Length: 301
Ligand code: CDT
Image 1 (tube, protein in one colour):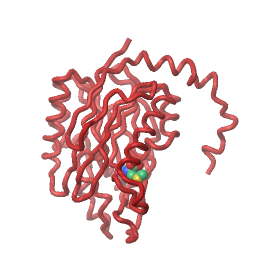
Image 2 (spheres, protein in one colour):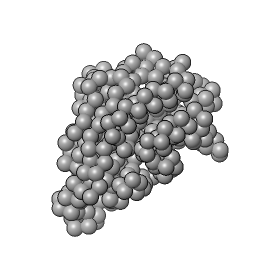
Image 3 (tube, helix red, strand yellow):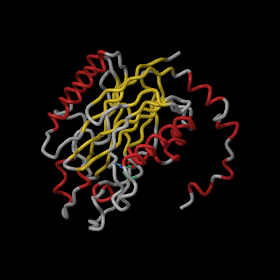
Image 4 (cartoon, protein in one colour):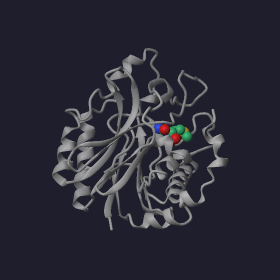
């Protein structure tokens, strides 16, 4: 029987001028609160260390390399690794990765309680566009600044639990969840930065965005009989608003913890991973019920 207290560390807006050190101090405050509440695994958002800079356009993209980390861990995040190790806490967070080969990815890692990076994931589904588009109310230039991830969706057994990751837009795609589900995932962590407005269709506002976020996570968790922790960077960032709504979801697809505000906020829930076995051995017993002979279109170009 594996039980674990899971935390989601929602982060309020990070302004352009904020340093990595200032952000890590905020992350540490939430980690300390999590430790006080017995949290054993803590999830932070996508691109936790910086503002969501893909809303800004630069012609020469190398001008934005300063938003990227060239090594992980590095000096700025070391206090986080050290504190988690002291607490015996596993954690996950997202950042922008610049590899030694000069490749740019939107990345997240899972860190064991011993302070080792045990899984690296590079975001697969990059939303938005690559060029400046003046008709949009705001830019969403992920396709300009990142390559689609090359890792695919892998899992790792850490702290006795099979864990996997998605990043933001990935949570809207059933393929993300199913590929993790096929590997027996028991805990999916997702970080997100979701603007509260669609930048082309103003009719899609905050309420619908929050609903679609939660719907995606609840459906993914239920259909693969896994826990999920989905954590926002949210509120006002450099004059742009992003949704909150961080949640922890159980394998039945029920929300068991939900953030109330749009600032730095900890959510906590206990997971009983034995509960994953029920769905995995009945309705979603993949070996017994999947009909892969009819799924070819999903992987066709
Ligand atoms: N960061 C990120 O992937 N954001 C996207 C916004 C696209 S609008 C649907 C998201 O899916 O939340």
